[in-house]
Structure formats: structure tokens, C-alpha cells
Length: 202
Ligand SMILES: [Fe+2]
Ligand SMILES: [Fe+2]
Image 1: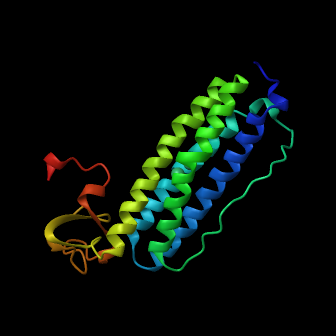
Image 2: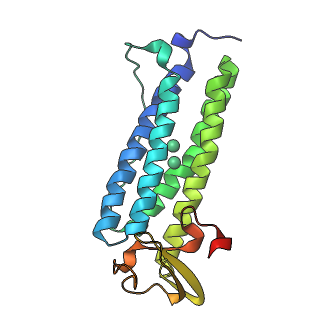
Image 3: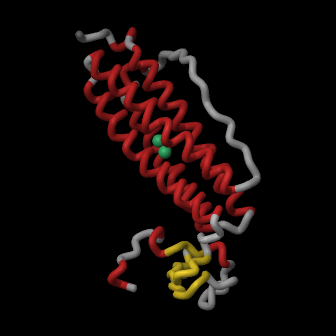
């Protein structure tokens, strides 16, 4: 049954999603600052990378509201306050929010959009839900490694890349400072998480 978009639930859900994504972007930008303060530069970069994807999600949902330009859409929604001085706690909160979007919020929005006849919006909710699962799992891995003290150390041996100069260090731990550029240990990232790195190049 086709529904008039201006009276649809999907119109509100798109605005809810726009608000949620906009806030996620800011939460991660603020979390990135905390990570930087704790000398966790590479984790700060992952927060910023994710924040930029949340901005892109917000834009996808905002564009779907283009036909409503100059209107004000009232919504009722709940949004989390995740303030913590501890980066592991910030990561854990982020995991919770990402998985909630993946498992509950966006599948429900996609279903409603489908029922109302808005296939493009339904597809956007579905596709972005899958990205949130990737965000959630990556944050969970980071929280686990930090919690076990294994982000910069690996008793079985590992490799880390300096996010400043690209130097790759092998061993049981990342060095206190990069031997090449002398930047702090916090610039190192486990190679499994390093951007644009092709294992065959190492
Ligand atoms: Fe998102
Ligand atoms: Fe996300």
C-alpha cells in the first residue's frame, strides 16, 4: 500500500536516523580527542575514520528527505550520553550503539519503509545497518585488545605499523617510540588493522 511520504513513518524515521548519525559523528570525534589525550593516536584515527562514515550515513538519510525541504520534522527519539575518560569504556559504549542500530533500529526502519512503499529508503537502512555491524565489531576488537593489554603487545609475536611514517616493527611489542621517526608508541597500530596495507608487501 503506497503511503503519502509527508504523512509516513519513514519520513520521521529518516529524520531520526539523520539525528542519530549526526550525533554518532560528534560522539566519535569527541572520543577521538580523548584517545589522543591518552596517546592512543592510532585509535583516535579509527574514531575519526568512523566519524566520517557516520557523516556519510547522515548525508544518505538527509538526501532522502530532499522532497521535504524547508519543512520541520518533529521526532521523538532517545540518544545516548557516552562520556568517559577511559577509552576502553568509550569503545564499549560505541559497540553497544552500533550493534543496536544493526540488530534493532535500522532493520525495523527498513521493514516499515518497505511496507510503506519506500524501497530506496528501505535499501539505505539495510545497507547502512551492515556497515554499523562492521563498526561495532571493529570497536569490540579494539576494546578487547586494549582491555587485555594486547593492542601494543602480543606474547605470540606480532607486527605493528607506525601511523606517522609507515615503519613496521616485528616482535612481541610495539617499541616505546618509533625507531624511524621517533613518534610515540601510540602511533603504532597492529598490522591487521593498518590502512591500505597489503600483507604481501611486508
Ligand atoms: Fe552510521
Ligand atoms: Fe556506525
